[in-house]
Image 1 (cartoon, helix red, strand yellow):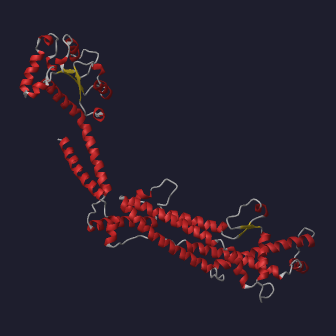
Image 2 (tube, rainbow, N blue to C red; image 1 turned 45 degrees about the vertical axis):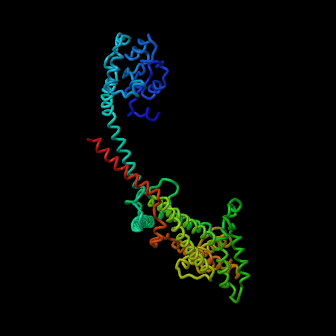
Image 3 (tube, one colour; image 1 turned 45 degrees about the horizontal axis):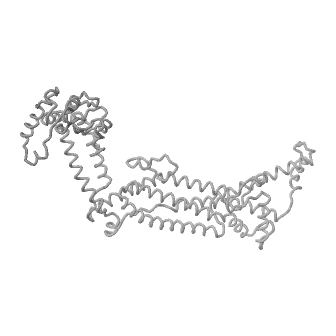
Length: 501
């Protein structure tokens, strides 16, 4: 009952017996609470024939709205037929006559009652006028509420989707969502984040996986940057950094001298038939394999990160395209199987790349020879600079002067030569370290570039008829609700038409 009293469209008929204290009646108290302006509450006083003799004036004051308990729309005074009258089959005409005779009798005739506020016929006429004005006042709100409800029903029908009670309807439904899903995935892969599906790609949170191409680019760049900075097993740092720097998992931080010592150790255990000053081809192989041992773990984490991105993207795309939760879950299971197979293929491709790196180092990339030449050129410049500085200190007393004579030229040319330390093993180790650094850069770059293209999402595009029915047949509950919603929509549409007349 409270919901009716709260509604602004409800006219409240506050019926109180004449024999009671009206101010204590619950209906009066609730009417004051829910109809504070008193625009829709009418008081009705009944059973005046059951009051004690001499109390008519109290009831009359209430009927004339002179009592402290007042209503903006006032009160009406009625005398209903007794149970005996109803049993005898009293007619409406007989009721009107009996009611008129009762209030025309001596106790009531002298109370100064408003004749328009006495009797069931006057109440009926008043309520009709009140109802007309009330409807006129409430009608705009009723129209708006009916339209709002109609919009909600239409939205619900859209969410329920097209009817899928037959295999042909299911095929058409799946063909539509398959096309939408395909277009959405294609847009994500191509980086086309606008157009008709632009709402899907709008993102302000941390997870940007819906913009798949951008997210994969970012992940690839993080992988490439990490490989450049931390991919090597032994990372050379300065002596000052060695005590404070923190090594990555599985990495060893070494100084330049420690790195040279490690190369020298491998050099000695790979000696073969090569002449002094040269190194065995297996030296570079062992050095490179040792330096690249962390690549497998780093690359697998990268593949896992890309797989996670693709999985989140596909899940978001399914949620965006497929509104039916049951169908969405069925499709998600099928797509997950395909994604797992694609991840397996990616792992297989990664293993191929890692297997390639276990062979003997080989490259035809000019970047390798460029690095070798640059490193040797830089080393030659450092050696010449150090030799000249030592020669100036010893042969020219710290002040270099040159007069272009044959003697001075010979002296200048032989000065660095006198300081060459002929250690063929050290020379071979130095050359090997230079070659290692150059080849590592080339191999790392090639490995990173190859890995970036081994993983792409799979789109499920075809199913058998049995699979279609299993995947997308709608539940009886949804089918029943669609019928109800359509019937309600018809009623509401007719109501809108009627209300606008």
